[in-house]
Image (cartoon, rainbow, N blue to C red; front, side):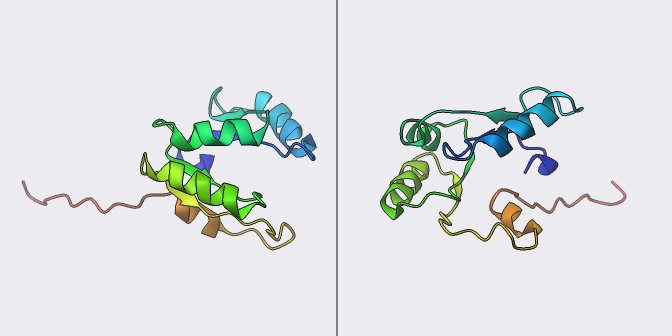
Length: 118
């Protein structure tokens, strides 16, 4: 998602935080500007509703949320500020070949017409 020029807030899994911590260490020593990737730890039940309702958050990826009721509540909260939401995928296949299709929910493509000869 950062490839498209977006900043990201990552909420690592409370049961498996090591990948997010490793990512944070890699980003801290890379050329990625500070603030582009923000790793936010805490109880998702407390933090996610706040992110869903916040006007400065433009999109949510609900991958990994197992409880459909929680996902529905977050989608409903996100609708109040017209966010893009990638629906919950509680059983995501992390072994599948990576593709760019996940980014479609977060990328806006526009066509700009430039008049010629003006």
